[in-house]
Amino acid sequence: MKVGTRVMAGAYAVVMRLRNQVLLLQVVVIVVSLAAGFGVVISTSDDRLRDEYGQRALAIARTVATDADVREAVASSGGTSLDPAELGTRPLQAQALAVAERTDALFVVIANDRGIRLAHPDPAELALPLSTDPTRALAGREDLATDRGTLGQSVRAKVPIYAPGGTEVVGLVSVGISTEEIADDLRGDIRTLILIALSALLIGVVGSALLARRWRRLTLGLEPDQLAELVREQEAVLHSMGEGVIAIDPNGVVRVINDKARILLGVTAQTGSPIDAIGLTPRVLEVARTPVDVPRSATVADRVVLVSSRRVSRDGKDLGMVLSVLDRTDVEDLTRQVDSIRSMTDALRAQRHESANRMHVIAGLLRQGNAAAGLDYLDEVMGTGPYGTELPGLENLTEPHLRAFLEAKAAAARERGVTLTLGDQTFLDGTLRDPVVVTTVVGNLIDNAIEAASGRAIEAASGGNPALVEVELIADDSTLLVTVADSGPGIGFPDPDSVFVEGVTTHVDPAVPGGRGMGLALARQLARRTGGDLVVGDRGGEAAAADNTLGGAVFVARLPGIVATGHPA
Image 1 (tube, rainbow, N blue to C red):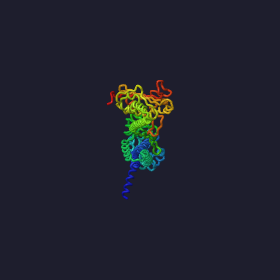
Image 2 (image 1 turned 180 degrees about the vertical axis):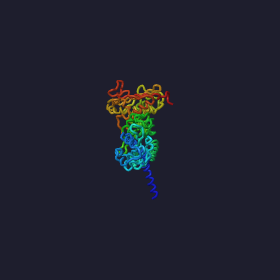
Image 3 (image 1 turned 30 degrees about the vertical axis):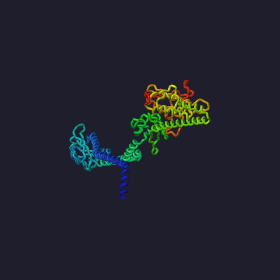
Image 4 (image 1 turned 135 degrees about the horizontal axis):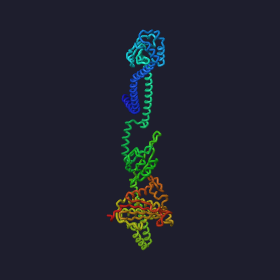
């Protein structure tokens, strides 16, 4: 039970760490700030109010002291032997009472030069000496102090009264404002300040609660230690996985990019850059902008990658896009190797099939006793056998990779009813520095040509135009020039150069990951990587040039520095 209690207490403490502790911290800060400000205001309010009331009393006293009637009445009321009853009936007494009532003063007292009261709120105090020291005022100086008199404690101001038309002091005016009134005002100010402080505290608490709630919503309910652990795990996972990942926020800014994505896409820009500015190829950038569930193939430098993207949301809020990148280069290499093996296998199968047919012919002639015809047939076979001149012009190629590769492609073409020939100017006396690049470029061009020409195979069988593919390879020093033409229908796209765009194809094959349309794009990139290029020499079809004897599309590749002069070892 104790263990369970401790676990619950620990869990509660974790929950408190973000929401309540932040709230409490902000409330404490607000309370301390308000208390400090409140204390300063309260500590200075009493002195401020006393000074304000003193200045008010001083202003009243000055006004009374400068009144001409007051000055004349006080100047004529000297001495100490005065009748209180008679003083109570004088206009001076009525005037002092009226001023006190109008100004809400505690008292307005008028005294002569002996300090004898001539006017007082209490008639019983008339003709008696002042209860406080009048010396300073009778000496011609204003006096401001807090004293206790017959009417209680007050802030009082004493102002000298001068004789009419002279400078002789004939009396004084004492005006007092009760300290109880000051205390009442101070209590009112304190109540107002308390209400303001409580309102500020309430607003602060509500604001802090809303801030803590928003913070929790922004962090998806995770605590700081969970966020830190999540970041560490994210870094470890993202940079160790074999798949490239780019996270893009709703504003199109890259927030996360792992090492694999940098390698596969050739990205060097830092996070925080717009997705349009990090150097993605147009096809990859298109996928990064629009969600694509089915992976698409794309070429980046000499790599072939599969890219897909999906939009991420949580609680109905758009969090951005995640772009996934897979390396398909190895798959493409294996595919090319398998294609080469398949081509060789097809060639051997075709040769075995042809050899078997020839043996049947010879056996039939011998059984019929026609030995002479059998010998003639053997002579013909030996002169035109599968390893002799089956591909005319092959003797002009000394490079072993190309010889074997072209023989295999010729056999594969025959299987599809297409005749592959070498151009009259074909000549290569040397070796290849990079056979993979050459066979990839030439192989993609031949495969596309066979695909295009194979549609004419049926026509050729019924006596129509033959299905042909012509390959011409010419070595100019270290540069290899490759021309591949076919008898197909030509390029049907309005812009012939669009055949080099990734994913552009007239053939749909769902079995190919990422789709077709990558061969020519990859071939052009490999050609350009060597410093050369791959272009459309003639789009063919109705727009075929006059010197295009086959009538189909013509592709021309230039591969500089690919040929090493000299005979192969």
